[in-house]
Length: 322
Image (tube, rainbow, N blue to C red; front, side, top):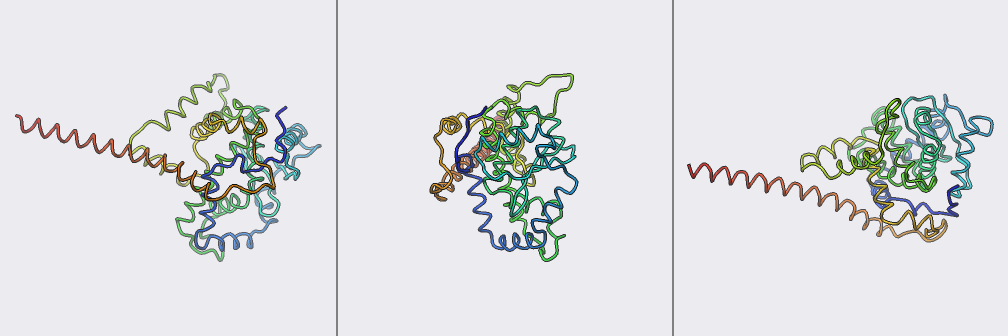
C-alpha cells in the first residue's frame, strides 16, 4: 500500500506554471464575467445533467472493485470529502473532474478497458488532484466553452481569442500538476509512465511495448528540431486541452529526478492550512520554466540564422572565385 500523505496540501504537487497561468487567467479583463455568466446559465445541476445523465455512479454495490480502489486513493491523499465517481460508456480513453460547487469525477469506460489496476489508480489520483487543487470550476468552463462554442451560449457574446488561448494554456499546465498527484496517489512511477504510453499508443494486443523506448522518444521530441519545428510544436498544441503524452512523461520524469517526489513520500511537504507559497515565487519559477523554453527556441533561431548566413557567405565566395 502507498504511504498515506497526511493533510498534504496541493501546493506540494502543483506546477509553478499552473498556478501562475491560473492567476494570469483570472486577471484577464472580462474573465470573471464570463465565469459568472456560465455558472449562472448552467449551474451545478446543469453540469451534472450534461456530464452524467447517461453514466453509472460508482459505489459499494456498483463496480465495487473500482470503488475500493477509489477509497484507497482518497485515503492515500488523506482527502476527507469523497467526490462522486461516475463511469461513462465512452470509447475514448479519458477522465475528467468537473462541477462548480460539488466537483465530481467521470472516468470513461475506454480508459478502464485500456488500463491495468495500478494504472487505474494513477488516473483516479490524477483526477482527485484536480479536485483538491480547485481545478474543476475552470476545467468545466473550458469544456463547456469548447464543446458548446464561444458564441452559442446566450449572453456571452464573442469571447476574445486571447481568453480562449489563456484558458487552454492553463488547462495544459494543470494537467502537469495532476500528473504529479496521480504519481503520489499510487507511488509507482512505472505505472504512471505506462499510462502515458498507453494513452499515446493503446495496448499492443498480440505485440509488445517498451516503456524505455517511449521515454527515449519523449526526450527526442523535446530536443529535436530547429526553429520551425518549435513553431509547429506551439501551433500543434495551442488549441488542445492536454499536453502531448510524450511531453507529460518527460515533465513527470524531470519532477522525479529533481528529488521533489522522494521528499514528499518521505514526509517533507506542506500541510493543508499552513501559509501558502507566495504568488511571487510561482511567477518567478514559471518565468524560469517559460524562459528556458523561450531561450531554447531563440537559440534555435540563432543557429538557423547563422547557418543561413554561413551558407550565403560560402555560396558568395564560391561564385566570386570562379
